[in-house]
Length: 201
Length: 201
DNA sequence: ACGTTCGTCTACCAGGTGGTAGACACAGGC
DNA sequence: GCCTGTGTCTACCACCTGGTAGACGAACGT
Image (cartoon, rainbow over all chains, first blue to last red):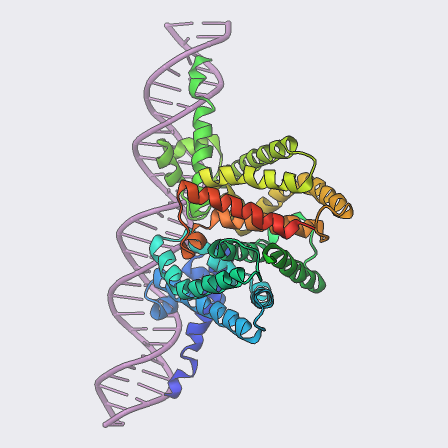
């Protein structure tokens, strides 16, 4: 099976390029030729690995969800039991890949533009996590360790804040924020402070 | 000039349909035929009023920015001098059209996907407002009436939160939020509470 | 040695895209 | 009555899109 040294390699390269392009330009604005060009391969090869653009999208979404879930889960596990500390850990953990590869969260945001089937599949995939998070936040609110609010909405709002700021470079340009290394570090800290202030009891 | 009873009418209808479609499906995913079909007119008529799809987009962006600026300015003016009260007024003012026509904010978000020239034009258009807002928030922070933070970032973050929650119905579906009239009212209140908690000193 | 499977390619196609050319209806000014 | 300008249309085009058909080489199992 040495013939397969490149197996998965091409596939992975296609997936990676697709995340970047779907996430930055959007699904509809990205042609198979664009992706193929970036990977350095013929369009045909894409359609060999993924039978259609739609199924490529599905694979891309699934992989992205998996990546993010892994990052988040690791952050939660490594943080102390305090809800604010956990939230801070999650925000920071998501911020890193979001800055390194803005398209990652951009892709998640793209979901609302896609056809209901795609959206629903992803929704169903994250649902268990969401439910666990809702339960956890609810408990912590009962204990008075978080501001009393609807746990589900709080998740949605925090998600909107983090995703929004990470995927809209234009918003940052509008307030003339420097996109340097130190600027990003400070952005991360202010983002954490913003979210924590919104959730503190 | 009675022949022009419909002048502006067609143009306005095209603009409105374009906001809806560009904002919901995205610019690239919307064809001129789609817009023409919704307006009930031939594609050629679109190209009569707007010489190209790109210039149509420009007009759409400009109109949207104007609409939002009007709403926001009115909200600021009608609110008392307290910064938290003003922020609450703005969030509520933006929330209303955002719910009535989700595509409005969706279009704004679309900007980050567009070509730099389009994005820059819009950025330049909102810049004076942003600068005034930054100055105002800075003053209020000095007075201790807002949590101390970078004013520009606070604006960007609040923008991200409001826009994100208003334009991502999927996020709400993921947390099983009811999209009923009363559900939306409560969403608005929780959104306001979230943002205010994030900004309170 | 040889057929088979795997990965990639070139060639091609039907349909949709943004955009052009030009005809038509109709109103107003002279 | 005729010319001119405005708004809309149909017909058409060059190009790009996602997707199919099938050839080709290389490594494999036997």
